[in-house]
Image (cartoon, rainbow, N blue to C red; front, side, top):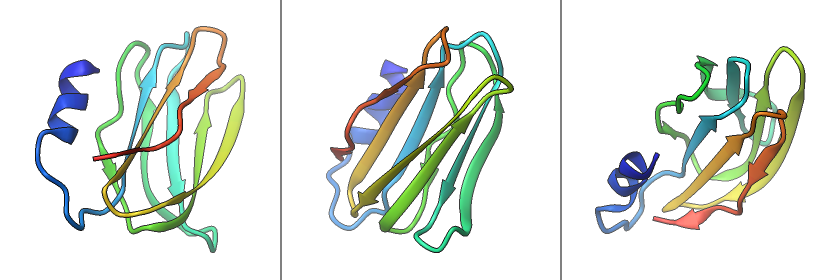
Length: 105
């Protein structure tokens, strides 16, 4: 995760679209979906393997709903994402989310 995180933040950001990444530390594969304010699916990463991370997902700015789900649980997070922001979320072995606030690139 640290290596990927550094790659996301290495370049100076001026007007880059928001990004998101999921780290799956649960005991089940996880799905990561990103919806716009109208409920339209903008991007996703399905079947993120146990102990793995999703690819970096990029999407337009605005009110964004993130849904992280496994076969045991589902969680929805709504954030107003601006340009040059990254949202990193991790799911732990108990299917709880570590939902840090977005950070600037």
